[in-house]
Length: 282
Image 1: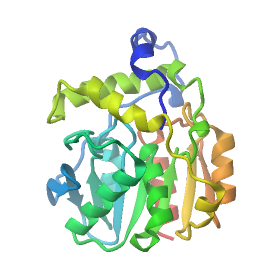
Image 2: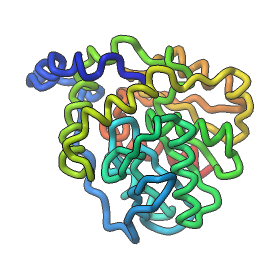
Image 3: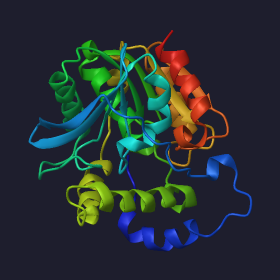
């Protein structure tokens, strides 16, 4: 997802984002993720010249949870606790994010999709459902377009298929600015390169400036059962673009999450889990 002038604008925005709110609405809050349960196994997988962090929980039909840009796997704590009761839940962190390493290769959604497919190969998982948030949803769309044989379902939350799907004022939003600040703090604690957050953001911003950029024909190739999902107060992705995706992808289901923003999985975990289950388990 494109973030305009992320480094230059951030300092001024953070002053606003850290001011105490008198009566924040749910969609304005940025709760801490729930703690993750104990993983059945975890580690790093060598994929495409990087070491990709992963963790696996539970047993049953596979579901891969893919976080958003600048994020990390722990954001899915509440979803893992619920879904791992009857699914094999796979968490991973995209190249350069969280505990995964990066290299000098230019970022692209095709490359990150290839990373996740290589991880599935490493874990010997032939097919999976994907729940993808933001960049994770875009990665899910990329896989659905190019490798539909690997997917059972796609729950694409706050994804865009063109850069103009991003709301131009996103960086003026206090909640989104607070997320970027928090992501930087987490990066310093868990990244293998804790002093390189600015360099990492600069590297991935080169991708966000021009990608994704899929045509209608690309989207119409999708045969995977797909849910296009958005919080009704999303500060990053426009409702107009979300409606376009749902209308263009054959058979796509439009899901609007009530009283939630770009961070719906944190703001309303029970409602989010219900929406995921109603789609991937039916």
